[in-house]
Length: 411
Image 1 (cartoon, rainbow, N blue to C red):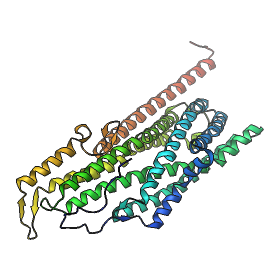
Image 2: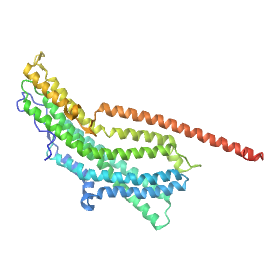
Image 3: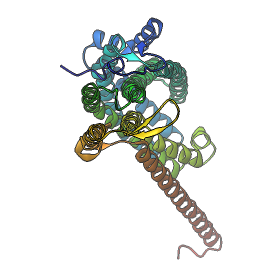
């Protein structure tokens, strides 16, 4: 049986108490979260285990067909071929990703709603996240719906199968947007609940002293947080990996559109798929790929607060502001617990692991800076080369026209 993320309440022998005790989430907020997470679970019940992913993955098949026909119509055959090759792969990954969310992450979050005691700060953060996801849901539906309608119009369907593809593309756009937003919401809620549980332990440690702390209870709570974090890491690592694969393929598609061959003339492709705009979108998507690790980093940051709070117990601050060092026996307990925490996860310390690597905000920011900087250099270099090659082709064409006009022929 899986261990809970944290034990509610402060230490039994503490002579101080937090400003506000953790409470169960308000019923209205719990009901709102359940309604928000309902779509993938409903699809799973109605269509079976693979229902949520099949519905969202199915949308990419008519999308690839309509995009291929529309791009080929304006002369962007190379981009059309790349999209036809990439969209089915993205669909398969997104299918498995959505099914994992519906089968593992959503039930995990729902099982925590009626049991987990959340701090006032955690409750406010969850409420804010829920409102943000609702805004993202509306944006996703509008974006995918508008894009699908545009491609359906550009397809100019005539045959029956073309009308079917256009209808499926438009009809499934809203469902795909809902599934994408719900998947992100489930991930965020799972990370926030785990981070709040760890922060409650740190708050309780701050509200006690080395003399009044129940060290056995503290060790038990730290161990419980560790077990809960390890269990959550095992559940969420495939989800994070799937999201990273989807975003990586998306970055490659945007890069190819930015630096690949472009059709001649004025058309919707050259207007909306400007190479500089696509380069910016590719860089932004690459940054978001790294930022998906911010959820695990929040959990690690909360775990680091536990270690910091335990370390602060070395000094006893009196009511009059006098600071004294704790006794040798208390110091021995503090050192022993600190050593236990620091040697967890193969000497990486308490925190969230992805592929056996502890994820911290320092690591995430370093990876983001490196990724964005690398994409900026790559985009600038490749666009410059493409511009130079274009000018050389124009110059070569003008020279050939001039030689033909003078009757010199091909050199």
